[in-house]
Image (tube, rainbow, N blue to C red; front, side):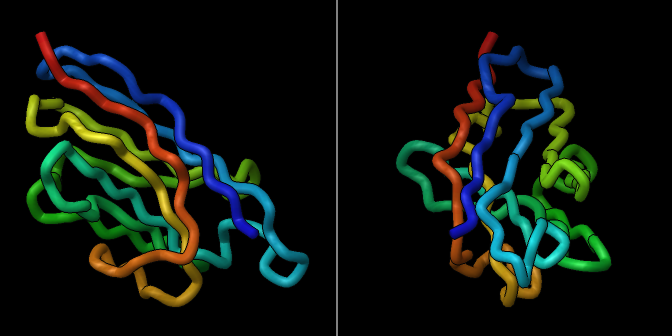
Amino acid sequence: QVQLVESGGGLVQPGGSLTLSCTASGFSAEHSDILYYDIGWFRQAPGKEREGVACISKFEGRTSVADNVKGRFTISRDIAKNMVFLQINKLTTEDTAVYFCAADRFVRCSLRANYDFRGQGTQVTVSS
């Protein structure tokens, strides 16, 4: 069972930056690290639906970012550490949400799919 733990959230002023981390563990021997998984970042604000914001694909590590955050959000990974990062720049109050990462082997980095494994999330609050 893959476990995902997010960190790095907090209170940030508008215009600031933040890097969220997703640490993965619990891999099987056959699929032994994040290389075998698409890892996505999602967010959910109070009263709003879940929104996929970025994904990094298994193996090749192709990245995709949602159009509405493109240019401000960057996803990357460190395979050796089994970590995936989401860098967020020029934060606005609209970015306030719980951010969580999720993993799946077969979703082709879809930002609309329901991934097999997800973390508990980390709160990002943008406020002056």
